[in-house]
Image (tube, rainbow, N blue to C red; front, side):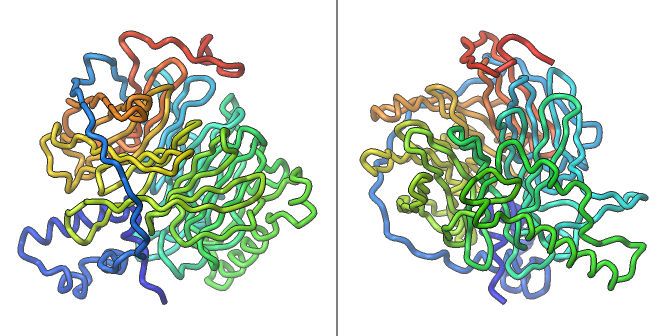
Length: 498
C-alpha cells in the first residue's frame, strides 16, 4: 500500500503539527513517537519529499501594509448554529442571492445558513436509522479509518443559479474503500430542497468546486483515484429524479456484517450508474455525472472558473503546478509555480491551496508558505507577496494563509490560527496595485482569542462572511460605510430579501 498522503493536506497537517508540538515540548523524537503509535501513518508520511518540479522565476513584490483594528471599519455579528457539533469545523462560506451566508466544515453533517443574527442548520440528506445512528458513506481518519456518517473533508461551498453546492470528500488516505465523495445541492429559498449526488467511483477525495457561468455547470475536482485526480461536472439544476437522498450505504448497527456489506455493494452499483453514458456526454442534458476525459496527478485541490479564457484553474496540494483546463478544446495546460522560500520545520512544506481568477490574473494562497501568488495569464509571469505575519507578532508556525476571494479590485484573504489563539486575521490587497508593481493592502486584526478564520466571501454590498473554525460559527462583517452595491439581475440582496 502506498504511504498515506494525509499530512500533505493542509488541515490534516495542522492536526499533525499540533500533536508534534505537544510532544516535542517534552523532548520526544518524531520517529520514536510515530513508531510508538502517538502519530498516525499520515503524520509519518509528511517526512517523504514531494515530487520535484522545475523552478519558475518569480518577482517578489514588496507590499505596503496598513494594520487596522477590524472594529474601525466593520460591525461584527457572530452567528452560531444551535448545535455546532453537527456543523463541524468551519472551512468555507459563500453568500447566496438573498445575502445569506452558507457554511460547511470538516466533520460536518449539516450546512449552516446565516442571515442577520440568526443561523439555521440544514441536514445533509443521508439516511437515518434512528437512535442517533446514520448510514455511513465515508471513512474517517479520526477513528482509524472506520466507516463514518460525517466527512473529514468538507472543503468547499459555492453559490450557483439559485442553490448552494457543498463538497464532502470523506477521509483522505490512499487505499480506503467505501469512502465516497458526495455533492449536495441545496436550493437557497424555502423549503431549501436538497439533492445529494455521490460521485461515481470510490475513495476520490472531493475538494474543489467552481461554477461555469457560460454553460451553467458545477465542476468538481477529486484529488485521488485509480488514475490520479479527475475533473467532472453536473448541471447546475441538479439531477432531478436521480438525486440519491437517503441512499443506504450500510453501517446499520441493527444488521449483520454480511447484510451491511450487501448494502454497500448495492450503493456502489447505484453510484456508478450515475456516470453519464457516451450519448449523455455528447448531449450534456442528462441527469447524470459527467467525467472529463483528463487525468491529473494526485492532489487536485481547489478550482476557479475564468470566463475570460473559458478555463478551469486548479491548484494541487501535492506539487507546485497550476493547471489550466480549457473547456472548449478539453486541453490541459500546466504552469509551474515558483518554489517557496519557506524554511520552517521540514515536516511541513508550502502547499498551494485556495484559488481565484479574474480577466488577467490567477491568484493562489500558499498554506504553510505564508504568501499570496499571482500568475499573469498573458505573459506567464509570477509574482509573490509575503503576508504580513510580523504585524500579528507571530513566527508563522501555527498561523497559515488560508482562503481568498475576489471582490472588485480587492483580493480578500484569511490568516488561520490553527491553535485558535490571537493571531487570526482577514486582509485585502489591491489587485490593480499589485499588477502595477506597487501592491498595497490592509490587514484587519484585533479579534481576540478563540478564532481561526478559514473561508471568506464578500457580498455585492460589501458585507464579509468568515468561516470561524472552532465551533461552526459564521462571522458576518458589515461595513460601517457601505460600499456601492455591485448588483446584477438575480441578486435579490441589493433590493432586500428574506
